[in-house]
Length: 270
Image (cartoon, rainbow, N blue to C red; front, side):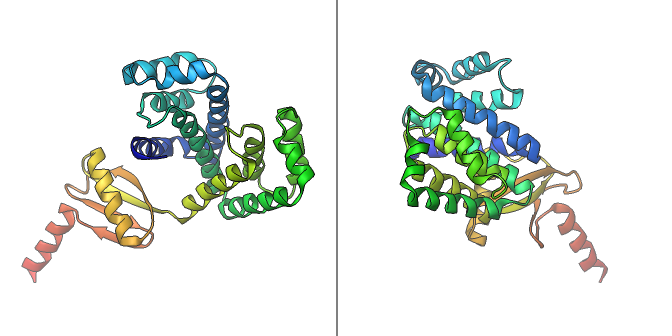
């Protein structure tokens, strides 16, 4: 994605994070987002309505909620409404974003279960297996082979040999290619798993909520410092009294007013 779409997906990734706070919640959200991505891919009229730039963002978001009401969870309906209300550089980016968030939810589920390294490795190896076996590749990419048959084939190959998340993503890559080859889909999914594995998480304590601009600046500053993408978990903490504290792993960056006052008091007392 480029330009506006890249900015929109970055904002949506932040909104996705609290919805994937447990392995079960993340897996359920990923399943439903994949279903929505498939719906958008198969219904051009609905896809155009969700992404129509001539309609106000609020109207597009409300349309998404109305269409999905009673069909998916409130969490899924909410994030899809956010997707519909976002701005996209190209019409197809809306569907691609829905799929990408679905993948990230499944990847988050694997992370909660401490299976992130396995997921990345297994997706890579499955891609190599498919590439080396023409008959298998044809079976998994033939549009005339029913989706359920493809899922059964993937499960038969990977059951007991791969994580549930790998089986899920491999099945989706085979049954809902969204205009891409199976190889490219598997590579994209593995890349998203690798990106999450390599990221850092910063726990930020603040006295008052950060604005979007402040979050962006803080994340960019930490990323430049540590050389990795940094996800912010922001905690409202009245003990901070002003400023903020940031903990990345075992390192604490303390810029709170409380700490500065305490330090000043110690200097005066010495």
